[in-house]
Length: 183
Image 1 (cartoon, rainbow, N blue to C red):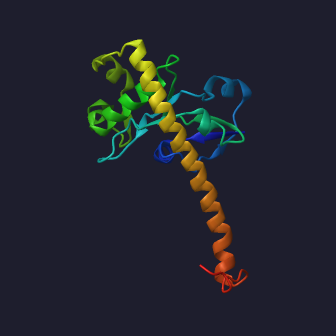
Image 2 (cartoon, rainbow, N blue to C red; image 1 turned 180 degrees about the horizontal axis):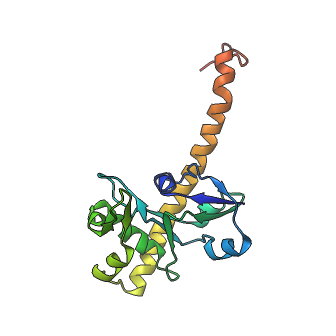
Image 3 (cartoon, rainbow, N blue to C red; image 1 turned 90 degrees about the vertical axis):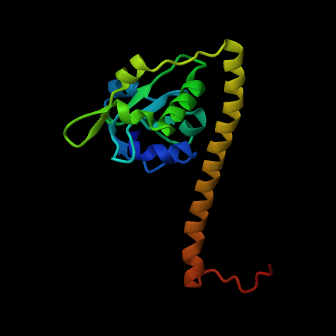
């Protein structure tokens, strides 16, 4: 039993939330090959719309993985990218920058109405300046602190939402009386 991240979950994950990932059942050998780890990137390779290209990306962090009681994999409509150690933050932010510039529309193909992302075409054609190791390490430290805060805030939002969803019906039904509360 595993959680399965889909393209539809990527926006939630980017904001530190778990999304509404479905549970799937896969063979242990498939789980060993598809399991997501800290530092992996999940890229949506099929889907999109006329105004939203394929290629959305999510960063898989240790903080995110800790929020699940089961392992995490991605669907067939997404692909796990497993960068070399130390490169995940740089690649994620670069990827997000390129996506936000609407570059990925030119790397889509497909004639059946479902667009597919041409990941190999992107990797072959786009040139990237590689930062020196020291600068990359500074960048990773800065980004790690920001990502940790994003996922801590996402967890706090989840806790507050659960509290709201528990208390609000009781307040509305009168089960909990707040007339004596002095604000």
